[in-house]
Image 1 (spheres, rainbow, N blue to C red):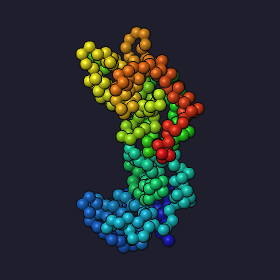
Image 2: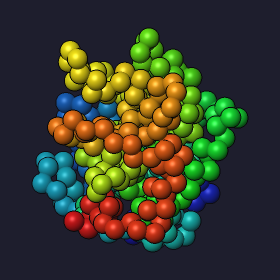
Image 3: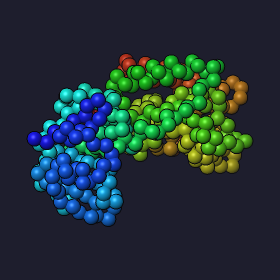
Image 4: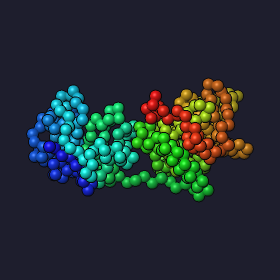
Length: 333
């Protein structure tokens, strides 16, 4: 019986160590003969009875092996599903994956299955309705990637760290980090800060800037885990690099004699309907307040006395009265 194993951070096929890229001739020696299809972007090798595929862009160096658990109707698809043994550290792959789901890394935005990384090897899972459809084995492309270096927050704003930590901890109790819509990422880097435009009107307040130094988020076109709920409406936290674009959009709503939105109100969360939560950066009374700006109703409401107040209230709501806010994200509706 064919045996795929990961042991001591190394990948083996029937006891033979395999690293990527690997030569197709080595795989043929281990697995036997296979079909070969020269497609436009890849050479594809198929072991029909084993339920395996291999991909090599140049026809020789195999970058990935695909373990198929479902039959598909492509010309190169195996005629049978994989029925061999696949284990990690002496544990069946499905059992190991379920127990270590929190250790998976998303390889791209919206990655539902994620990958388990072992030294130089990546084990990536493709899911179909929560079930493993296929497993792709290849090189761990993240092994040599330098970790990002977020800008440390200024000491004066250290109080934001525990507020962020508590918000994340409360959220993680309901939504696991491997969820498709879990959009948290590291704090902003010096390059991201340098890329943010700065004009006479658009000046990011120090508190909001330090908020993003601690953590940032990714954009998702559907929905997002990190959001604020006000008046039964969801306001998704904006990625740092989109703040200026959204600020510009609000300025375009201004007309002669209309004081609908002060240029020193900085959007940081959107309702995806033209409504925003804004940080009031106007010097004087009211500085630091959080304002809800409703586009169609042309109304402005102070929803929190400060960013810290908004974060604490959001955390308390998630912990004590979450309601159905995450039902869609968790696939409950």
